[in-house]
Length: 184
Image (cartoon, one colour):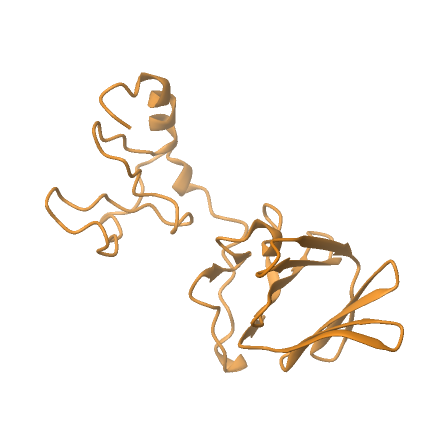
């Protein structure tokens, strides 16, 4: 960010540490956890270490995160490495809205999908096409056992531990096996 960071100093009261001359805020991929920037000379690809001692009193980290959902150990699967409890970090089209946790996260060769739950117990589907960059959000998918089915203009998106199947009427538009899958 260079030496002139005066426009960013208001961020300091929210717990950000500004480092003149550095191009990394050392905060982001682990947005739920504050981390220190690596010391000068340390490789930039080294994983950041959590700050010892916890957040300072009054920092934004002192407020419990409403999305800090720990996946149950018994489901046998883990959240994909590029996702967190709100969905995929790098794909806004497959990420729950602020403060809504994911109940299902999945990836096929062509798609990243997430089923999200609102604070009032309703669900919504968000899917992102990895090949075409298109996204879709559909309210109120229906849960049937371990699967969810979302319908949008006659197109059905069925998300299960086995596959993402997209159909229109009796025509199968896509049938992609799940490469990664997690459910709450």
